[in-house]
Structures are given as C-alpha cells and as structure tokens.
Image (cartoon, rainbow, N blue to C red; front, top):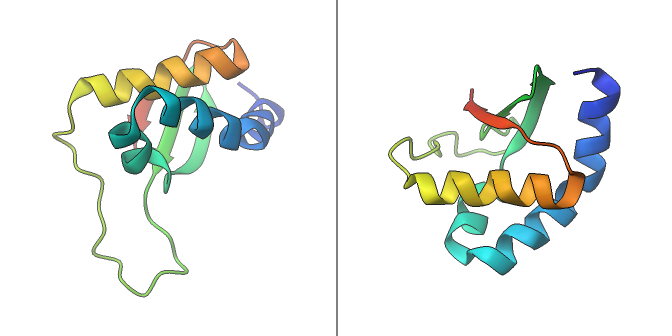
Length: 89
C-alpha cells in the first residue's frame, strides 16, 4: 500500500473509531490511543507509543481478546471498504 493510502486511512481514523465504539466500548478503549504507523500489503501496523507523553509505561496488552482486534478490523472494513490484518509494533 502507498503512503497515500495510509494518509487516507488516517483521515478516516476518527470514523473508524466511532464505528468501533458502536460495536464495542472496550475495544474502542483499547484502540483509541493507537498511532497508525504503516499500511503495506494489507497489513496495518499500529503502535501505542506517544513521544509527547511523560509516562512511557503504557503498553499494548498483547493478550487482548481477539474479539477486540476483530472488531477493529471490522470497523476499518466498514468505513473504508478495505480488508486488512493488524500488526502491533
């Protein structure tokens, strides 16, 4: 995927999050702070590091129920029409 497609997804990210919140408030809480890193070969890479935060101890809970991940991916598809998989950086 191109940088333009990542930029387009970033422009729609709030809509993705609104859709996700309507499906699962818990999933929304997990992903609302994610930073979109890349979108290549239908793999969306996100991370949760924020250089502006003083508390860098926040990490993604790797053992999160796959239903939350699936809810995020469904929200991406519902908003963008694009089917992606997820990678956590």
